[in-house]
Image 1 (tube, rainbow, N blue to C red):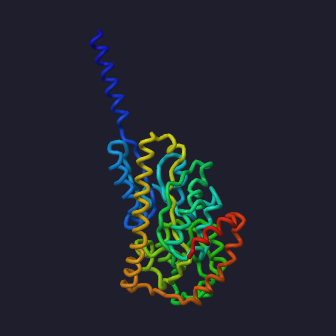
Image 2: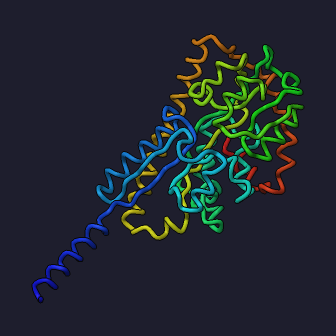
Length: 327
């Protein structure tokens, strides 16, 4: 009897040890193609995290809305159905108004200015701006500066988009931006944009060169204007309570993996945008419209009231800090 009891206890210990040894599964869901900076950043995170934490974590990456689309990924994170997502900063207005600063048109001259702001005390503090809502920011990932496109031959001045229907992300700032130039903004999930452009449900969109190429938007648009009027920027976020409960060594390893993935994604973003702009030009399906300084000045002037409209929600001091990052 004692022998049976000892064997049973040993088996129980083995079973318990096996259960304890099971890796922590980290599901990383996103809505864009693997060939984009975000897609490559997610794969780099998986590679580094599993290398730093062998047998302790298993990172599963789900690109192109395979698991959850734009409308559902935040809810899935808060429910614990996924552990990491990287939404556009435009998606956070319901959790904090301060991140709307990134949607203001013509706020940043280039990605270098964005980097400087994000590394400033104000930019770093924004990562924890949704802590009370159970959301923790782990890093900022670039996609690039936004360009405007349309199914019309002319796209050079604000009057060229008057009356046109433009797809936007779910953002009050972006809605105000297009209303300021007389266009009709239409909030729509990223996965639906190609078909909407193809069928004429919307006339145009705003996006980075890498997204315009990878999603083939250039095939169903006539003109892409080089506006650099805004940016597509992501925050990689996790469920705050889940993160806080992780073993310290796992949390440290995932943080290091995120830092490396962030550097990789942000370097890649610029390279892909340069490459994909050339690919779009070489394809010859959409005309790339350069803008003169006077053209850009006209767009800036038309969209300038948007800054004032959202100054109360965002904070004048935060807007000023971001603007000072330009050189």
